[in-house]
Length: 301
Image (cartoon, rainbow, N blue to C red; front, side, top):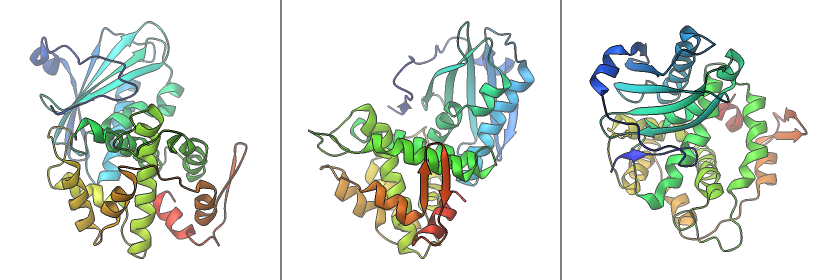
């Protein structure tokens, strides 16, 4: 079933009642060559409708920047009012067309919206096919990895913020005792951050093998252009085959063979050193003489 849930399986599927009326009442945004319909359920919000629409459009612009276009021709975003908090759980789905549902607090501020990562994460899901449950790590991992890169591409995040957060968070994806590889270890850390670590390693390896002319972005753009969206079910092998062909090698399949069925401990300290990323507290500095500094700059300049 081509449905994808994100952010901790927090929400059930949105009700299908009155979808036609909801679409009639939606605001229609044109982004990245596509139409994004935005429905605000149970408003009003203190921040105002215009700010919420700008937020949705900014997130869609970020995803369009990464994929080279918005990844589906038509998508729907349902913003559900909550009396508490700012931006809470979100879910994305492919059944009945690409759509996502995100819970937003009545008192959400413009600062909350500008710092949000959740909606961009959900929209990234639109750009890749749904896979078997045992491969869910590639769905969540790719969205976790791509979201900050996409936001950096449109100037919403700095390179220092992107890499500093990676240094802080990527260790959550390393295997712990009893790990049996990405396909067989379905913890939160390995699903989200283990998948993100796979994507980072794949990005670096593709760029090393192609002289930094290609990266994971090119592989995933090719998957999306071949019809790989949240609206379809594909085997992961098809995703890898298309991605490898687009990047002229076998970096994805080689890495998958290494990490799918057994734990692989990655020396992250050495990886950051090779990329020229140094984080001390909240301060991030780059070493442009590092061996993989050019790759770091290409991934998130």
